[in-house]
Image 1 (cartoon, rainbow, N blue to C red):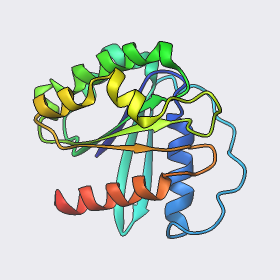
Image 2 (image 1 turned 90 degrees about the vertical axis):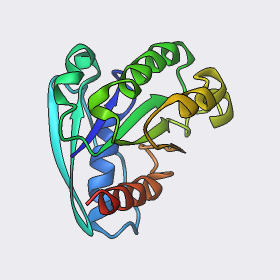
Image 3 (image 1 turned 120 degrees about the vertical axis):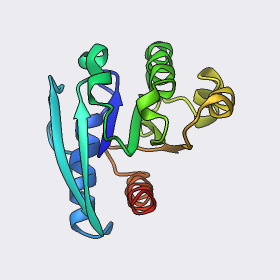
Image 4 (image 1 turned 180 degrees about the vertical axis):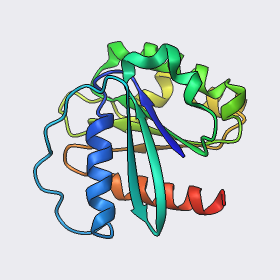
Length: 173
């Protein structure tokens, strides 16, 4: 099981829809226009078939207080941040620290997604890493942490996410 977490409005639902479409065409071809999405209230389960079936559980950002009840059986964690919203970054960092310190997630591989890099006002990866003190997080965390810049809207970086999911779930059994 893969958990997809992040604040409200960072693009989690669009990411899942895009990954599903991308995996259905072996990572090739035009994704087309982004489908409409609404904020997730509750949870969505989506299967991505990429060599093997990977189930992604997306939890709405408003469900942050009960995220821990979903940590069991989590092999990988996608944590999404909005690279165009610096005011949301500190709250996202607090959420990420909580996830990294959760005992049940100690064995999970973590991919931090810096989304919305297609917007003109986005922060660079270096700015984001500096603001959330990523080197310190990586040094203290039990988990393997990877980062990637993406645009769920136009598809940038999504093949990297798909490859990471495939590699992580293959390695974890």
